[in-house]
Length: 162
Image (cartoon, rainbow, N blue to C red; front, side, top):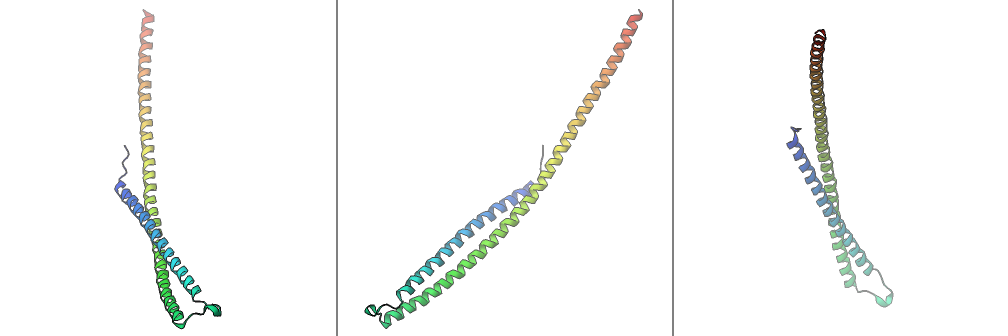
């Protein structure tokens, strides 16, 4: 029975690959959330900026209202900048997790290939052992058949002389 002596290491590499895949999915979800938050804030800023645009003279805005809109726009700009920074950091984390997954995959695949080569060697050795055994059985039968044939031939030969 085939037993891969590095099976424990292979199992650890497989677990590391699964963990890396899980971490990548989590990082991608976080990045999606950060992108959505940034987009939401950018949209809110655009809507607020549109409310602060000059109107016709019949709908003039007061200075206080314009200052308030300006203040809110500054705050939204700050929040958009923070959200953009967080989204960029989340994207960097996704790239890092993707690299870790690729490394874990490569490490596991290396051991998989080694296991496959060992299994092929084991099967070749088993086949060679089976062929050797079959050759020995055939040779034994042949030599026993030759001995029986020689005894039978000499026995019939002596029987003819009688």
